[in-house]
Image (cartoon, rainbow, N blue to C red; front, side):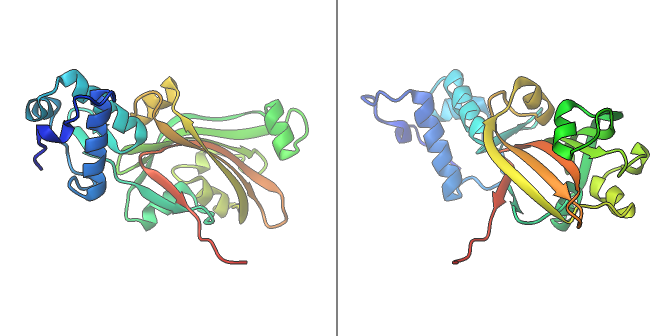
Length: 244
């Protein structure tokens, strides 16, 4: 794909040059000139081709990465970001959802402990004070790429042995007869903190989706409380709408 310097014309335009360059690249992606997963030219190449400084190019690319249009792979370059659509009405674990799409789910464990329930967890689950809960904090990956930072909590009486969870929490709960069958999920847009950005390999301030999920057994007992930060450049949550 060849980008011409005249596409950035408009010397009287007060809009910063890097913003105009980001708009140009964004339009190229939307038009299909750059395909999903395709690598963009290097900063040096774009700088020479468009007759702008590398600082301008870098700022434009960083803006598009924060928007989720582009992603960067260390040592490989900048790519058009693919997206994963998950039906928001589907109660499925991360592993099962990715497996259905032909992707390899994975986890990088950060914490896996049995501990006394926090005051919030006591209230959320309606537990007696000093009850034990199982907590799982991990980076969820697809084809070895980080997609989400997830913390899941389950009352220990439903999952007394942490070793039962190797990859899928839902599979472990299913084996014990404690898999959620209904749930409530809240999704909010946010920006990645420095810690989240480091785990998810995105710039600080990049768009993320914060998801809080509560899973229930058939009798209405709450069995799961999960908070996740999903990369906004990878995930879309879609809903089917019907006329009343």
